[in-house]
Amino acid sequence: MLYGFPLSGKSTVAKKLKDSFSKKNIDCEIIKSVSTRFKVDEHIKFTKKSIDETNEETRREKDDSYRKLCDLVESSDKDIIILDATFHKQYRRNWVYDIAEKNDYELYVLWTIFNSKEVINNYLDERKKNPDFKDKVLDSIDQYECMVEQTDKLDDSEFDNIKIIKFVREKKDISFYNCEENGFAKEISKIIKN
Image (cartoon, one colour):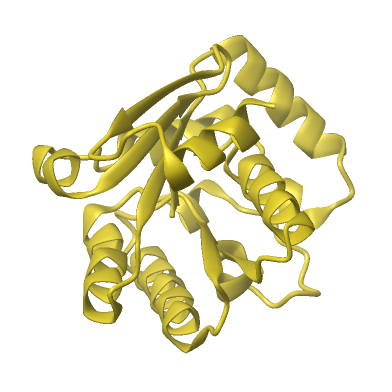
């Protein structure tokens, strides 16, 4: 499960992981929250209202999207499932934690961080020019800041109980919580550092 603010590299990391696993003949899929919220052929253009979860309609719409994402996880027959979403609300992360526990899945939270406001603004400018609708769902700094402001950060219980790999993108720095840098965690760290 990827966790992080918009523009932190979640989709890039998800694609790298899927490509790497596919080369090893590991059956893997990416499930994106944007795909469960909107029709595939629909042009997506977020407004602050469509991001601001103080708006009850927006919160319900996002909850429905994350529930669909969870349903897809439970019905998947893949060896590895990569959940590509911000997961900025703890109760939505808890839905995934519950599914993992119920189904005895090995769950890793890959926390992507990108701190440079200047680079974030540059990425936002690039998104505005990109004709690929999936890459321009968020295209203004006020939308970005709205989401950041409404984020429930990972809490102590998550750090105590969940395997977390923290990736600071601009430094290519990786930290591990509740998992050692061996086995699967090591494989993930090798893939995302490249």
